[in-house]
Amino acid sequence: MTNTQHFGGWRRVFYGLRTRIIMWYVLLMTCSTTLTIFAVRQVLSVRLEERSKQILVQEITEFRQLLEGYREFGCCEVESLFDDFLSRNIPVNGEFMLSYIDGKFYKASPSALPEVLVRDRKLLNRWSRATKLEKGEKITPEDNIRYVVQPVNIDGQKPGVFVVIHSTESELRKLNEVTVVMVLVTLMVLIVAAVVIWAVGGRVLRPLRLLTATAQSISGSNVGKRIAVQGSDDIAELTITFNAMLDRLEAAFTSQRNFINDAGHELRTPITIIRGHLELLGDDPEEQKETLAIVTDELDRMSRLVNDLLLLAKAERPDFLNLEIVDVEVFTDELLAKAKALGDRHWYIESHAFCRIIADRQRLTQAMMNLAQNAVQHTKREDAIFLGSAAKNNQVFFWVRDTGEGISPKEQKRIFERFARVTNSRRRSEGYGLGLAIVKAIVEAHEGRVELQSELGKGSIFVLVLPLKLPGM
Picture 1: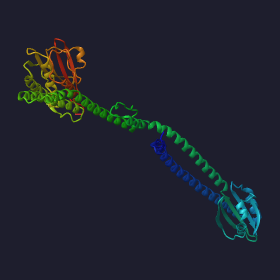
Picture 2: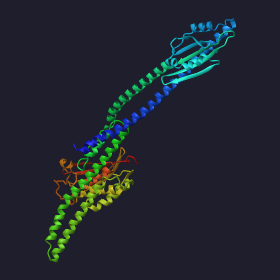
Picture 3: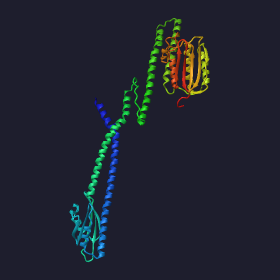
């Protein structure tokens, strides 16, 4: 393997369609998942803040209700107030309650405070001497603490302070753990999805690789490969289009090859004849006149051959036919009038079809005249030739029937091939054996077919079967 091929292989891996699809998928999924995780985390964080605030409000409200009750029943000892409230309320997770009397710490529930508060003596001292309601929060990298400070002033009693604290450290830790799990799960899902997409993408894009391989293997002598169509998606439609293109290329290559082979095969003889006579041309005027006649005749034959080959080559093109509406009855009479000039035979019309078809009048006339000329060449003067037309089952039939020598079953299989001649004929055809090939090409261009029935010694009948209305018209 050369370095260029090696580089090209790795380039297809990293820059191929399947790789780009996976990269775009991973990028889109990563962005969408990141946004989703961020949104979920934000929602949970907002809910966590709201819950923290609700806990503080609830505890302060309950404390104030108890304080009002004490005042109403005349119980004015601050110590009893703090003891009673702390004994009744069990702190939830992350909740702490402190009490101060006369600037000194009295009790806490639970007894262990967050490490952040233990280190912040200045904040604790400020709480112990608070004289008005205070709300605030202390945010650190590892914790988010919210608090409410409620002063307690009872006549004749030492001033007290009640503090409710809520720490979100444990909830934040759990939230971080959930976020990490979500990220890990997302990464695993992306990896598995990428592997699955790589495998599935290979199967989906397999027709494209076949298209590439088929296109690379096509040459002028090898255009017969086709790709199997699977499914009904865009790739299947592309495959159908590609196969149709190959059909057109194969038809064009075949037509070109046949033209070159046929022209080279048939033009060789007249060219040899012309060259031989010109090389032997002398000074005798009579001899020159005879040679000129021979050369002219050979050139006329070459011209007819080239025209016939060009006609067969053009039959593969979509613009081969000039379609128009043809009255079959009138057209049949026209065929008889033209055919009578081909030879002194007994000419008859067997039947008329009273309908109209969409066809190329000139091409169809050419096909029928070729059949009539063929009938003349294989009949005698006393023989009869019959022309006719009929319509049945959405088809139109044109035929030429003769009472001549007929064609053997073996010859019938090859009679429509190029340059084919009937070997058992008592007469030598004046053409090159392209007449029936031209008839077949014209009829097939009309999406029809040619049928032949013949028996030695009894004659032949050639039938052109055309659709009454061409598909798509």
